[in-house]
Length: 330
Image 1 (cartoon, rainbow, N blue to C red):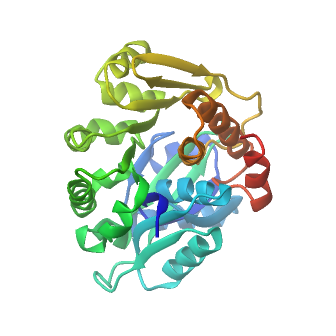
Image 2 (cartoon, rainbow, N blue to C red; image 1 turned 90 degrees about the vertical axis):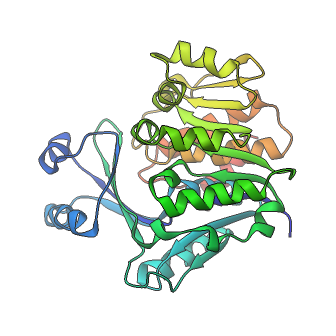
């Protein structure tokens, strides 16, 4: 079977809460960042949130998962390589993928003492999201989990940037890129988080060396990966690269850099509720539109609109009707 998009990413059950900025300070996390934590470190935060009665939503998540769910809802044929435990959360996760029409490789009996990963997403009144992730068994996804034939028969191989934080995950990425040498498969990379880029720059550089075709990032991640001091200099850096770079800028829209040319796509005028999942929606929407033959300017305009709909929603996903409404804009 020929797939449109195959992705490698963390399988995390996301639970999203509305909190105050003071709550973040109280639990010792920096706003608008992603922090890795153990189950033991997550537990008291979860208990505090439950005791406060904070408004919440929960679903299967992970950055690549959100992108694939969007693309699949538009009609792309998608495949996800991930690892979940044989537990209640793992079953729920895979059921959610199936419901969205995303094929998958998921359950593993290895590391059976580890649970399915969980991510706490804390949304403050300014609509920014702060993540506390416990990777669980997902951290052990390795090269043995990859069906190379599936990836080689995909139009795009999409790499979630968070894969660099685990040695097993990173080795799986590199093993797949080795198998894709000489294959007619586009390689796309999400930078995921500016702090992750700074902390694992050598791993991102190695991924880039395999001939990436697309990079998706926000403005902070773009600056971090370029090594420049500001976005203007970063854009000039990306103009010298052979790959396309899609940079999201929140309320300022997005910038696409390709073949030395910079394209600007204005943002939709909205009232933001929750920015969680906006970048994931952008990437999934862009890849779908690109595979439909649209030029990068049209892809960016469509993806900006799609992202705006997620930002107007509490949670990283839309309903089936919501995705259908977005698709009408393409």
